[in-house]
Structure formats: structure tokens, C-alpha cells
Image 1 (cartoon, helix red, strand yellow):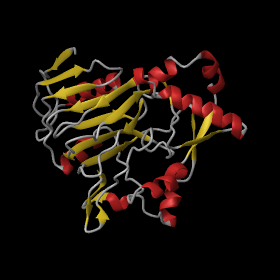
Image 2 (image 1 turned 180 degrees about the vertical axis):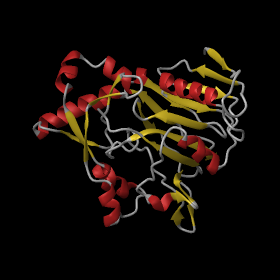
Image 3 (image 1 turned 180 degrees about the horizontal axis):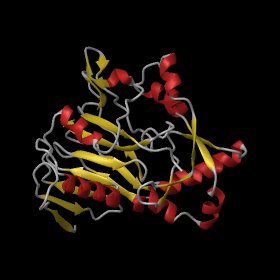
Length: 299
């Protein structure tokens, strides 16, 4: 791994921190060592973390001992926060924090236990999908629980010419409900949605190839979880094209597999990557806190 030491000599706020960023030997991702969010973060250090997030798409903050309030405050420096439609799994007193957990207490799940069962980009089913998500480990299983990330810039760059031509200028529908009934049958973590919740997640249409608003790089923007059809294409042709895109977008040479450590917080760019939960054994407890940052309408 390459190492870049981030030391701010003239902070505009807060105290300069000695932070190391180490790129992974992978198609994306880097770890950040030395960040202390119990202290004010200088604008210069924040800018460098922001740049690293754009460059590496996934940042793993190691040994981050923080409160939900600190996670929320750090997340908000990147933009407004989004509250998940399954608000019943929000952390008490902190609706911005989604509990991702397979733990059941008093016969009821405390969080969303099957989050990430299919490859997806968070909240692609919204008019303004997520810029990024931060997931902080609270309780980890002894085995399992890994998270996979796939680089969608590489997916676009390596897409065969005939498929690039087929998707140029085209858009696709995304809907939260695409796999919801299937997931309900598999687990106890998907409650029946109220009419108000269904109204929150009406289908939306986004370009199949989106341009990153900060870097200008193109990326595929479809997923097996939320993308249902290509607009203006017969259903059978749409299905064939989407299946080809889904298969290509998660090739092994695009993927970084994150093996969680205690107090890891992972911050990924939903404009650049998709992710997948590899699964946790039923007898292993897992709990993480997620904040989700609102992005821009894809173009």
C-alpha cells in the first residue's frame, strides 16, 4: 500500500491531526488511520479526506471510537442527511441513524437485518440518491459479515463497445419495491409498508450512465436490487440488457471485499460504487449504525 501523511500546518479551524491514508491493493478503497472526531477537524484535514474519498471511492476509518452524535456531525459536513423509509429502525433520538442489525430482542428485530442482500447503490430509488453512506461497527460477528464494493467507473470504462452504444442516452426505472416482497418472504426484517411509506418511494427514472458531479467521471448506475426496466425498450430486450449490465458491473476485478474490524467506519461513494452484504451466520450477532448523505439528481 502507498502511504500519504496528512498534516495540516495552518488549520482554519480545529487542530491539525496526523492522519495517514493508505490505498488498498484493490480496485478501490483506502484506510484512514489517526482520525479523531472527538476533536474539531480542521478545514484542511477535512478537504484532504474529501479528496481521498473522491479518489478511492471507499474510505475505511480505523479504530474510530465515536458517538452517534459525532457520526451525524461528521456526515453532515458532506451534505444533508437522509432518513431511511424504514424509520422504525432508526436509532432512538437519532432518526438520521439507521440500525443495521440481525439482532432480535423481545421477539422483535432492532434493525434492518438483511440490508445489502442484493447489489445496489443506496437510495438510487430517490429523486436525489445518496452521495455516500457511513457505516460504523458496533457489534461484529466472529465469522462472516463482510461487505463487498464494486467500482462502477471501472465497470463503465471496460464495458464492451456494443453495450456502451446500447445504453448511451438511455434511462432506467429504479424502485424500492422491486425486491421487497421477495425479501419479506426470506426474513423477519421487512415489515409491511404503510401507505405513507409507499408514497415516500415512488419509482424514479435515472440515466443508466451517470456523470460524477465532482470528478466528471462516468459510471454505470443500475443495480439488481432497485433497477427494474430500461425506459422506451420492449420488456424482453430490457431484461436482456439489464442482466448483461448487472453481470458485468460486479466482475471480481472491480471488487474490494471489506473484512470488518472493531470500530471500523466505512464511508463509500454511492455515485461511484455498488455494495453487497456477504451475509452473517444466524447464530452470530451483528450491529452497525448507518448515516446516509443526500446527493444530487443524477445526470
